[in-house]
Length: 346
Ligand code: HEC
Ligand code: HEC
Figure 1: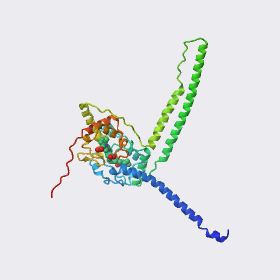
Figure 2: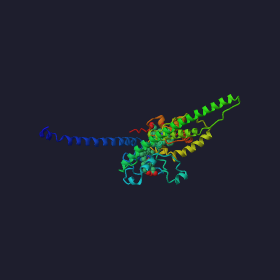
Figure 3: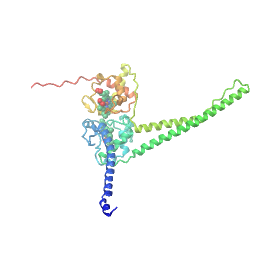
Figure 4: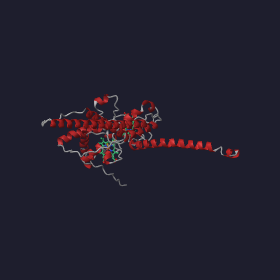
């Protein structure tokens, strides 16, 4: 190769290096983008009506109804001081928790409880991975850094599951070996008894210690599978058709409790209005008692996504009794038909 040719090609290596650099940086940006896009999508679907597009107070269309309530309105999620005052875990726990009766003194005194009924939980609606994606997005709103190792957590749960499966498999093998050994011993004892002319012989029932070990391993495996699924998948439920028949007096008691739960535990009023008061995220419920069938309401409360897959109404983690109570309450809502708009002649 002549010196001339060599000098003509001097640019190849720097160019390749630059192209490589370009691809690397863009690759990272694309990857980063995908995660942010997912968080943004979830945020816009489930959070923006109350917290605003950029997390600022007063921005969401449901803000005014929230600030009229006795609970504090949301803090400004775009405020940079949020970065220090709240940890990734705090944000996670604000989004994922159990709804509790906020008028109960035990709940009021529980300093570890994020006790606001007007912030619905998403624990029963989204996967933990999705909730972490939201935490990352909330962090980006106030320019805070997100440090929770989501992928590390996923790998940990996955390897716990694999380990639990291996333990179960070997415990099952050991149990099977012990069982066949026991069966052989029983057969031998029976044969010996028969040979000795003992017709009444009955082998003794023996509890194998291996059985208990295998049962424990099976329980651990189920738990590990649950934890992994909880992390990776949205919770799914099957709701059986309830028998809601009660006497009129019983119905009144349930409805009274339901009314209390509606406001103080589940904060339904943060998204729904009654008599013009309350949130605007879901439809007004003044006439729910006429419009909706009790069984339908019960099933809707227990698992909204089972009826409408992408509904904005989260599953609030109802138990059977609470769902009966709130259903009874909604059945009492039989407000008058809204006045038709008046047409004023000119
Ligand atoms: C129906 C209205 C509503 C919706 C929907 C809602 N929030 Fe909230 N959120 C609130 C209220 C009210 C508070 C205030 C609680 C407080 O400060 O005590 C709050 C508090 C928070 C906080 C803690 C900061 C604070 O104000 O104390 C975070 C973080 C948060 N919400 C994130 C989310 C995310 C993420 C979503 C969507 C998955 C969401 N919220 C959906 C009403 C809502
Ligand atoms: C985060 C906001 C939010 C909260 C909290 C919420 N809902 Fe809803 N709800 C909705 C939305 C949005 C719809 C509309 C459903 C759809 O079309 O996706 C809805 C629909 C409904 C419906 C059906 C209404 C109709 O006319 O078809 C009922 C009933 C209902 N909600 C009751 C409740 C009750 C009771 C609570 C409290 C336990 C509650 N909701 C809490 C947002 C919410």
